[in-house]
Length: 81
Image 1 (tube, helix red, strand yellow):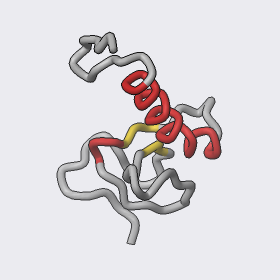
Image 2 (cartoon, rainbow, N blue to C red):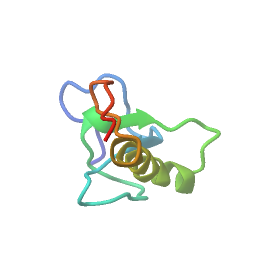
Image 3 (tube, rainbow, N blue to C red):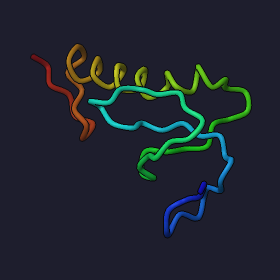
């Protein structure tokens, strides 16, 4: 059976999505998946499935670089060494 979980209102079965399935699980490319709603968005039609699968990893890489290399904190402040 294909469906969405209880309380899910922004998605329907068959929607093309991008989701971060978990930091330790990495990215994925699948026809069917169970993903957290809090890290899932609809995939724009201009983004291929392969490009969509790479979005979570590239986003996390950019965040890690901003934190580690530029000293930017999640609260918007900056750590100047």
